[in-house]
Amino acid sequence: MGSNLGELLVREKLLNSDQLQSAVDFQKKNDVAMGSAIVSLGLISEEEMAQALSRQLGYPYINLDQFDVYPDVINLIPVEIAHKYLIMPIHRIRSFLTLAMVDPTDLDVIEDIRFRTGLSIQPVIASETGISNAIKKYYGASDSMRVKQIVDEIEQADDTSVNIIEEEEEDYDIEELVHSTEEAPIITLVNTVFIDAIKKGASDVHFEPYEKAFRVRYRLDGTLYELMSLAMKFKNPVISRVKILSNMDIAEKRLPQDGRIKMRVKMESGMRKEVDMRVSSVPTIFGEKVVVRILDKEMLRLDMSELGFEKESLKLLHEYIVRPWGIVLVTGPTGSGKTNTLYSAISSLNSIDKNIMTAEDPVEFYIEGVNQINIREEIGLSFSRTLRSFLRQDPDVMLVGEMRDFETVDIAIKAALTGHLVFSTVHTNDSASTVTRLVNMNIEPFLVSDSVVLIIAQRLVRKLCEKCRVKHNLTPGALVDIGFNEKEAQKATVYKPDGCSDCNNTGYKGRTGLFEVMEVSDDVRDLILARAHSKDIKKKAMKQGMTTLRQSGLIKIKAGITSVEEVLRETVKDTEV
Image (cartoon, rainbow, N blue to C red):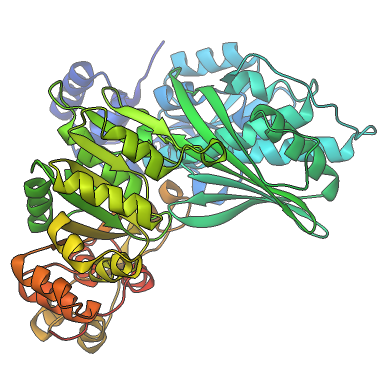
């Protein structure tokens, strides 16, 4: 038993005996399938091999892009087996399973699948790329499809009442969840929504009640996508289930509440992933809206070189965070990645000889070796009070989650002027306007100029999917309008999104930062003392070599990392210096 693929291709005169031996050697050395070995060596193309197999064996050749596969069929074969054998279940009729294969001569695989499923196998031929794409498409989306199936089952059931069941063990296994539908459909529905979000890398899940529908959305790479729109009868049981998991008061529906969920998820690979979730509920006119923020440690990048800093900006940042005193501020709107930047900075300083203390609202990720405190305004544990107590704890480095009021800023400045390094955030549009914001908080300009040493403005933009991005034929004039100079506009190659199964047909995959790092130089200090306008401060910083947010975006457009639309959405054109 086994594969006769090589001999078949020799009979078709697509390979000679020497080439076959090379493929056999490659297969043994790299532990891959014979078809993969032949294609990897460039002996023939996937298409040629598939067509040859179809002619010799009489099995039909199919294009998997033209097939829709249902969850019931996908569930017959685990994803790890599909990857291992490069196979894809297509269709089932009674006791027969149609199976797409790269190598249908491999009788060992056919026998294994027959044994696993108890079904007779009818092979069809597909290319390796087609099967790989189908595995990503259908197994990646199987949880979303399962959610729809669960909803359909509940809709069709005679008894649609749902009891909320307390669940002590928070060890979620994807396979067990799939088979628990009859036992507790709402529990299964909520868990499947969370697991699908975690697998996709979503940052938030929104449960939103409206007048005639109950909508569930994900935020993926900064953009919201609708997962499903449910009937209103799902609203109360689903919201109650989420509130129970997050230890909220399910009887209180008139006031906002906050909670947390700690979930341990068993992925298809067999590995377990621990995920923290911050849960917030607010009363709307049609019921409670709940937003779940997913804090996945694996998504946190603590290497500053991976965040998107330009070379000179990163060099400047490194120079200032190793100084013994001063305030380093990170500014930008909510969701612009400020926390990630701050965590990356303090992680680079985290060593046995440093006492690092943070005050956060709330602590999002635990960093070993760093003393982190949750702000609790309701009991009087505010940023200013915590920061004041830090000064009695012999700190070297302090991180304050946000400069919200005069008292907090005043204490931070005093800490910086007495030999401490302080990191914090402010909500402003760019680096220069941060100075104006501090002065508007009644901080004297001389205190700002003496204490603040570096200001970083940042935004997040979506990264183009490298597998499907396509050239964007913009005219040089259009490129000049967004900020390129004439010479750059003539030479720049610009890309735009297209969409493929690897990026959920969005054209984007992942995010990167745009950064504007402003050094508070002597010239900038003079302008601060003179209460200069933020535009004048920005012009001075640009003359001294500062890369602006728009310039950072243009650099990433030229590098093919992001699109023109993303940069235009997050930045404004710089005023001429």
